[in-house]
Image (cartoon, rainbow, N blue to C red; front, side, top):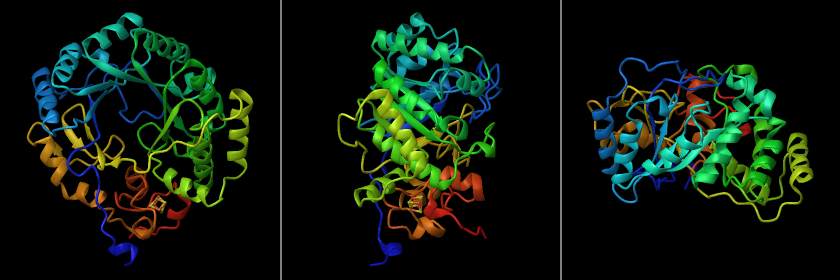
Length: 372
Ligand code: SF4
């Protein structure tokens, strides 16, 4: 049977693992790579409290196990009704994760309030050491605020995830961030591979070979006491398979991994990486501030609106999502032996070629595609 004929069935066809809800566009930061191109105040059209409550009830209708609801923004704590929304999500039995911005509003009292309202986990962004991080985030002092919020969140008993964007200006300091998280006791590190969209500039993207080197480094980092996840880099699972056959990275990989060993000592355990990840539309669905439904926050294709459409039906039945889930892809990703466990970033394919089924240009196997 050829690769094209193999039927691929997603474990996420009935329900997503993660539902991202952009609760507001309002945010006091102005990050260079911001997907949401956030504003100082909410934009017109934001879902009302009643619409938000109804959305949470429909998310619960996905059944068991319920998806994790990730409340993003903008900065969710700028919504006046955020505690009412969190309380309803918790009452419904949803796992609530919050992704607030690191501003002076996010002090220990606020983190305790979020936890008391029903938030179980929190993600904060830390891209690089102080100077580079603050320049990326657009506000001096953000690095220190993030570190203080991380420590306070751990103290109040929230599960903490640190998000880091990989791009040219942050790649060389990834070991410094990894070592910081290990020493602070942060349990989860989510590493996002840049999609050139929003405020992100194309010159900050790494080459495909460098992306593979970073994947190798992250596999090495997973051997320490921090759970490493990637976002928009599903090809990490292809890199893992290649490694099992004795293929390793090149100069950037060697440099990053040896720096981590210098900072954190020899890796104490084996590589840890799940066998099947999520893709936009395959385990993930995104709801924008105005209710627009799309496969992911970086794949801005409108599939409907929660104001008129049922999120459960859209996720399960929309032809575009079904096509992503069965990996009916174009070019190299469509012929690839790894497409069941990888499938390439659909957001990067769309950003590069205007086609959500095109190959992922960040993967060395996916380059050379001639969009029709
Ligand atoms: S060609 Fe596509 S499916 Fe294959 S490893 Fe690369 S990104 Fe993944």
